[in-house]
Length: 153
Image (cartoon, rainbow, N blue to C red; front, side, top):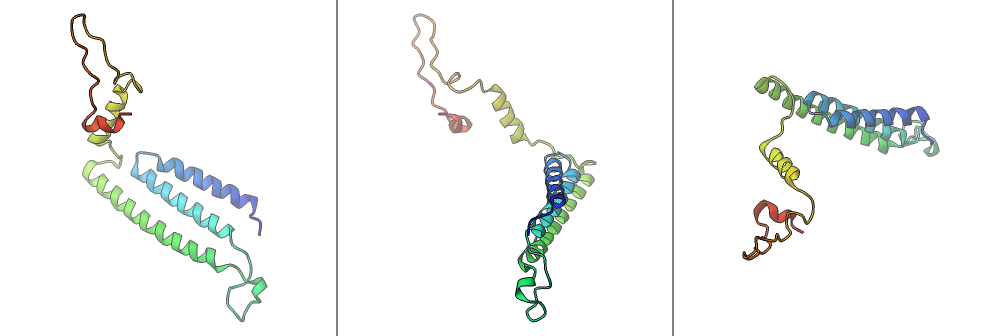
């Protein structure tokens, strides 16, 4: 079965809107993004199956039966989407009562990594040996330790 162009466009719009909403900072928008992605996935799975009669042996000839696998996968996807929706609703509700808003804030580690990235001048410029004053010995190139050890190379 070839999918209808309308279904393909609707699936594309649902996925695009869902991903866009998932990238927001508000938990309410993330929740809406998960719901849209779940609905897009369900519609995509249903368009992949063969249309026909009920897949019950004895009531419908084998050639005219619909494919039951996409239907079972959609039921599983519905349960997963419902679980994610309930979790995000609880998270959003808790955030609203604690902070008065549902915006996700940067934590201390995120800020530290952003500061390190802002101070980084590029590969090789900070790790090169510097030439000292006349009469002084040049210091050897320092060996990176701690957080800088992962960036050396």
